[in-house]
Amino acid sequence: MPTEKQKMQAGVLYDANHDAELLQERADAKDACFEFNQTRPSENAKQTEILRRLLGKTPQHFYITQPFWCDYGYNIELGENFYANHNLVILDGAKVTFGDNVFIAPDCGFYTSGHPVDAERRNQGLEYAHPITVGDNVWFGGGVKVMPGITIGSNVVIAAGSVVTKDIPDNMIAGGVPCKVLRPIDDQDKENPHIFKTNKP
Image (cartoon, rainbow, N blue to C red; front, side, top):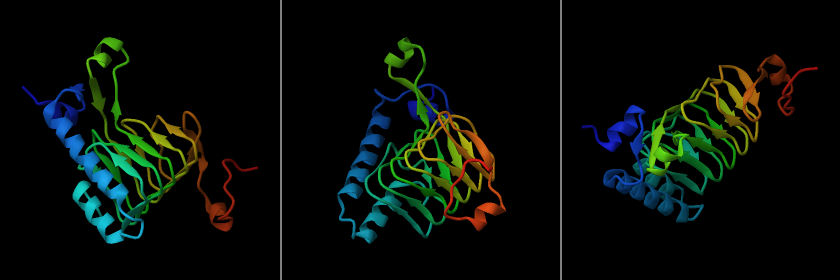
């Protein structure tokens, strides 16, 4: 008989609310997040030490601005030169993998966890978790929310306020609720680095 954690890792329905192992792991992660969030902003070395202990994979260079919250921590893998601004939330029941040079604006969320649509199973405390994968050189604008099971390619910009419910391919600007591809990134974007346009005239 698989454990609830094994079910979680397999992407099938599992009991997140009554399983002692998962409850303890989430409590430990929340304690680590609390410890991180209570450090002084100038205590960079202490912050880094806490995050290296909490997260599944950390690169040589990364920075997460307080406050930050996650569910387990060990399912989060950061690429080189990762940066996240204030109020990042990662619900990491499944793997959340970031490539190199990922920039995340304030108030963003990455949610691998979801609940059954039917109330009977939802009220039993059941949920599922599907992985989120982000490529290299991706910029998330403020307030972006990424839903379970999403893959975002490399060299992508996600406009502020977007809710990402479908995969986004490489080399695209995407935005909206729900988020959709708006246009490719091209050479004109290099010529006008301070002008963000979702479409061309």
